[in-house]
Image (cartoon, rainbow, N blue to C red; front, side, top):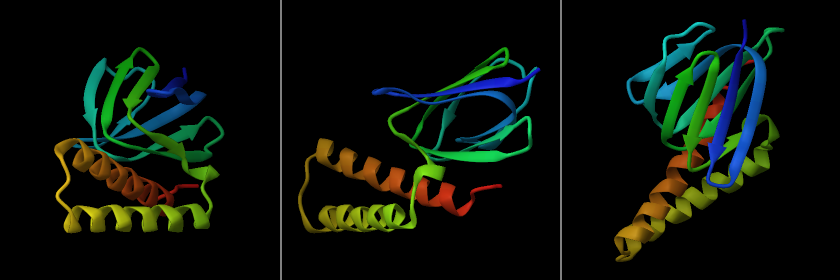
Length: 140
């Protein structure tokens, strides 16, 4: 049997894959590997990389922000604020994201932002770091 993975953001389904043999999730307790027949699971996710292995042994990684995952039967659903398929990122995209994160961090240090603005900047920094991590750890 094989797994199906859906990664869902407020914009909708951003990644869907079938015929997967393993899914590795960045949970708040560390990385968790999901294979066919896994017990039902609902867990909190840290920002980081979701790794998928296909039946042909090829692997992909998807960078996500914090969120939740649900494993029911052989279907895994990830709910997160943001996600991006790392294979679609160029080195220029990564450099641009790093620069944006640096600028966001500088804004935090040099201004008195309200709680909502701080939360948005934190999310931007977390997601940028998750993309970098996923790109650096890309398997395959």
